[in-house]
Image 1 (cartoon, one colour):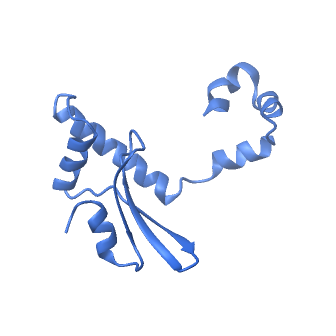
Image 2: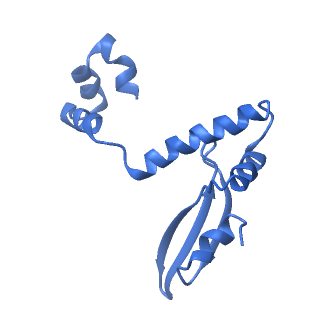
Amino acid sequence: MFIDAYRDRFGVEPICRVLQLAPSTYWLAKRRPLCARARRDESLKTEIVRVHQENFGVYGAPKLWAQLNREGIRVADLTYVRTWAGFVYVSFVTDVFSRRIVGWQASRSLRTDLALNASGTR
């Protein structure tokens, strides 16, 4: 985004030289389609803005998250960590705007209820 903001003024190559980034890396990234996570984040941002505006701009993160859940729109992510005792699976629910974790759950097994428990849905 930084290069895009200043490329008309300074040019891509000089900016990349200062940032110690190959210009080809920039151009490849520009052509690459958005990953599934980025596409999902964009659709969530649209929904979050909609709910926020429908509620006169007064809803904070917890109320936005609750309203989205009532509408069937879930905000969750799964990851795993290898430990000496085996794998631990962790589900996080993040607020797309603030990137804050608003819910989480850890388990030794990867089951559907892991994500559901993190989001407060049972």
